[in-house]
Image 1 (tube, helix red, strand yellow):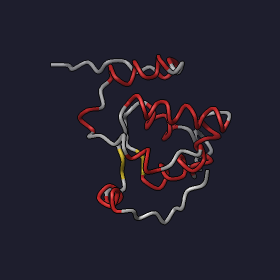
Image 2 (image 1 turned 90 degrees about the horizontal axis):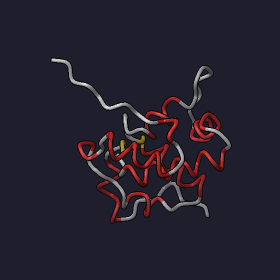
Image 3 (image 1 turned 60 degrees about the vertical axis):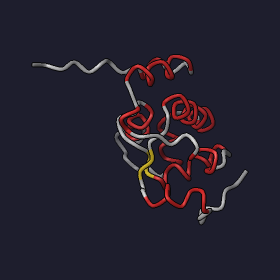
Length: 126
């Protein structure tokens, strides 16, 4: 399924004004996992999305996967097109950054067989 990249539908107009998109952990991990499976690796997926680092093209995708940074909207459109998942449906899983937790992310990684990306709990030093 292909998606028209000029989409400006009314239900998502407010979402597209912010160029960075946080997605719920469970959905975000599953979406990226599908992309990794189709591309063959996280580095190949990153290249499909337009990341060009020669050292580690998958680093930004990894950071998004573990909830350290949001999706740039343009990359999210490329991912949804690449895996054939409509952007309208992706945007239903948009959330606030405060709702992204280490526990939720690690649980989603474990459930999707991506435990190798497990993130350690952040320790606060006093």
